[in-house]
Image (cartoon, rainbow, N blue to C red; front, top):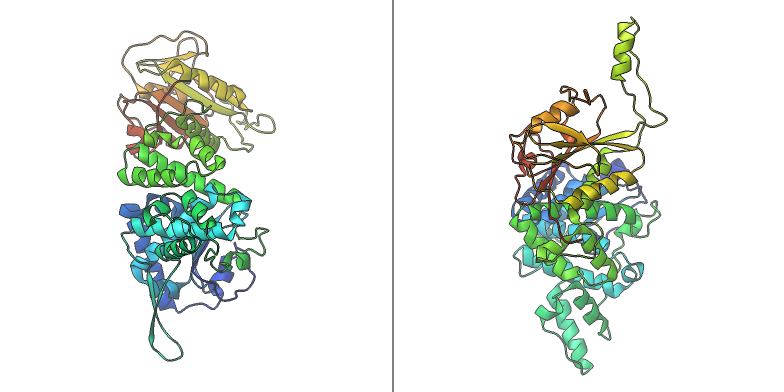
Length: 482
């Protein structure tokens, strides 16, 4: 969504045409440099103490473009899967650091809200647009410790006087108009604190007004979105993917005990959960109930399971790859022939190793769920290992014994082809992913390809792989009743 008032008419441009945006009435180099510095300082403060959600979101915006094609600032989501932050450099300079923080927080929250409230009938309702401005600015003022909107200070080009304008919609001013409207109707109005309690409350109360103070259209997305096929310049699929990635990343941070991440998500959850069936389902699918000490027993997939599906999917991407058949290659070399690369069909089968720590306390249903998961995945060849001090291949359903000391290095040596096991020989597959189910209590290791390793740590375990250098994909398995 766009921040602030209607901008000057810009040319119709593609969202992905970065150079066209930057070249549109370019600002002075000094102004661009000052604006970029303000933006970077604001984003640094988000990551340190203000907003984990905004900090993560702007890492997903791979292009931060200073442009005079818009008057204020906007986060755009294009149909090619990319997100862009567009900002008018003079606007940022006029606002100063605190004002830039406010605007960037506002824009980040707009994209998240666009994901949570994606119903077309809501977005077509100008009262909902007003409600969104009220709720977002209220939260921005609360989180950033402000009692007023940021002030834009600029010099009037006609007479050279200093002009100071509040930027954005003032939630308290809207509340005053709401109170007056309902009083004129003979109805009882809510106090400000009750009015802004949740996003749904704001929308419902504004709908009670006879004449809601609906703002003028914020048209910058319409202007820039003309070539995208999306009336507001926000591709729904891109918004959904980026917003989900951001919320999942922040949820992981909250699970690790990061106070700011937990606090911010609890606030967002309280403001939006239950507003529509869709928002409740989205929060449920993310497994966010743990923030409030809730266990959603009716959900088919727990949060750690959803995380594992997402991580595995990122490692098992489509695509043909050449492989070197080690046994056949050794035979050809012995016969004096040159080694050859081979293809396995039109697309190479993905190889996943799942290693089960028998010295830990992994519930049986976890192994059963993993068996079902990989069994449904097309083109995936799964190898199962149990391990403690030694490595023992097994098949799902077989009894797994163990109880000795734990040694992760033996698993790495076997998977990487250095360790032979009696009855199985050496492992000669090219592995795409290794899933380790363990309590984590054993000397750390550094696999040959850490990016392929996924660690599921049981409750009370040591999540050292996440702190390791380089860090590896790591998540705690928090189990509930099934």
